[in-house]
Length: 341
Image 1 (tube, rainbow, N blue to C red):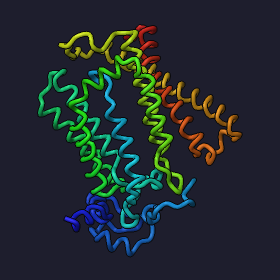
Image 2 (image 1 turned 90 degrees about the vertical axis):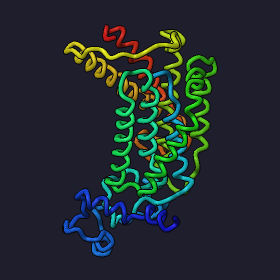
Image 3 (image 1 turned 30 degrees about the horizontal axis):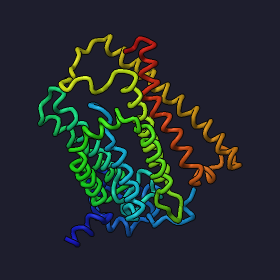
Image 4 (image 1 turned 45 degrees about the horizontal axis):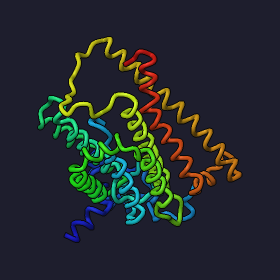
C-alpha cells in the first residue's frame, strides 16, 4: 500500500497520462518514450523549470442556500498549506499553468469543488425535477471525472492529489447531508445569519495558516469566502423581504417550453447580470484599495503592499462580498425593474 501511495504521489503517472493525451515537452519526439528518460534528456518543459518548494524569492443553488462549497474550498486551501506537498515535477511533467506554481498540491481544490458542486446539485434536484436518477448520477460522475482528469492533463496535480480531493468532498457531503435542510432554514430565517455569515469567514481569513513566502491561496480563499458571505446575506434578505423560500413543503420545480422569446429573455438577463457584477467588482475594488492605500500609505499599483495580510484580506473580502451581494440582490431587482422576470 505504501508503495502504491508513493507511485500515485509521484510525477511519472501524470507524465504518462499527458503522453497518452498527446502532450509532450518541447523538443521531445512523440514516439512513446518513457517520461523518466525524457526528464533526463530535457531540461525545460514548455518553459517550465523543475518545481521546487517555494522560497522567499518566489514572492512576486436550488432548495435554499448551500454552504457546502465554501466549507469544501476553505478546508482544501488550508490543507494545502498544512500538508505542504509539492506539485508534480517539471520535467517530466509539462506544466500548462504557472499562476498556481507557488501553491502546494494536496488536495486538488478543483477536484474537491467539482465533486462537491456536481453531487450537491444532483442530490438537491433529484427529487424536485423529473429526470432519471441514473442520468443525474452519470452527469455528476462525468463532470467531476473530467475536471479531475483536466488537472492531470495540465500537470498541476498528482494522481493522489486528485483522488484525495474527491474523497475529502465525498466525506464532507456524507457528513453534511443530514443537516442540509436545517442549515438552509437557519441561514434563510435566523436573525443572526448576516452577522455570522460575515464575522465567521473574516475570522477564518485572518487566521489563515502563515507561510514563509507569499502564496495566492490566502487571497483565493478570502475571495471565495467573501463571495459566499455576500451571497448568503443576499439570500437572507430576499427571504425576509421578498418571496420566502419556505412557503410550501410540497413545492416542485418544472421545466418550461423553450421558445425564441425565452432565449432572448435569458440572454438579456445574463447580460444585465454580468454587467452589474463586473461594475460592482470594479467600483468596490477601486474604493476599497483607495481607502486601504490611504490608511497604510501605499499606491494602488504596489503589488507587494497588496499582498500583506492587513490589506489583502479586507480588500478581497469586501470587494467580493459586494459582488456576491449584488448577484443575489441587485441583479434580481434590476431584472424586475426592466421587466426581465
